[in-house]
Image (cartoon, rainbow, N blue to C red; front, side, top):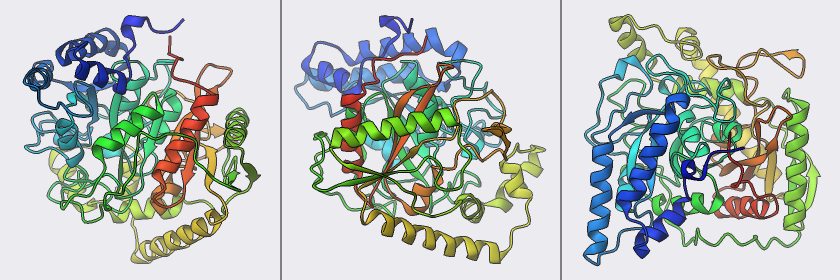
Length: 477
């Protein structure tokens, strides 16, 4: 037995169409979302900041535009949640840290600005790990975010609250950030769609790149913004509203002539897919690996493609990834702020700050990234998509950074997320889509990685899988 009809959020596309048609007001859509949040969030802790009055004012502005005969936007009246690492004008953006507990930005991140221009209603901020360091949903400021499929389990992270807000039906669309899997990991553990576009597809500024704020500057070389939704169509709708270059982000890519709404199966003559259960090195729960492989085979059948069991041979990307994160972190600024306020960071941020990094380690990581990127383009020159499990395990307990063991082997706390950093290091588009449930009733995700800048191809492949293995009708109890 799942959520009641009243507790389920309609899709973003459905809400926007009804608001534009006049059969639903933006105010009512916002009130419905606020009611769902009031009912559900006391037990899930997805949100860390709400401003109902401001949200209703935004909704009224949408209704006024429609009443005046003016266009209201692609996301007219859609309630949207925004991760607490993404800057929101007039709403707290704490980065999950006591160091910024009172911080309220005076400008929006570019993507939030575009949400408002598209008629979306920014309904609140969602919980994250401190500064996004850690693939979980706990921090020292707010109550731990819980997985709606089992509130005793983690939803993953660091876009924990955004994933839970969507999975539990509070909102149909939420924004997350993904520096090493932080959109795809919680999507996998909550049974939602988490899309990480190509690097530069969605501009980043200022929330992830504010050089004046230690810890808030993000990881410029790795960070992406991406939507979390229940359907591929809603993810594509978000891309239509948000993508395109910005002068504020020198890495943003030009706007291509892409019809994001065209999710028909891609025409891929003689296409090939590759599936690897472990990238050749990872410890993976056998149940998770088997479920991901079944989903991969179903996708190959849906696309009438050949499926190879093959790995790109990149090896373990975690050491290079961790070094690049350290290189892109204002370690001195964070350490000084913490010392002045007697704040002690939790792991893994504490480990990163206390470690004595060397210039040689950073140089080696940069060279390793080049090797990984070259290995990937060579591998994908003959494959259209690389398929993997999204994470190595199902959801585990709360307030820990990872399981102590996987498949009977003791592992470090980061070992359960071996698949996601790869697409951050290369900048390739990747999506996590639902692949089924474990015997314990916990969601499992399949990751689809596409060729460089083939974002629409990734979404079309995901939509093909969604047609043969629909998932949006499945709701947590």
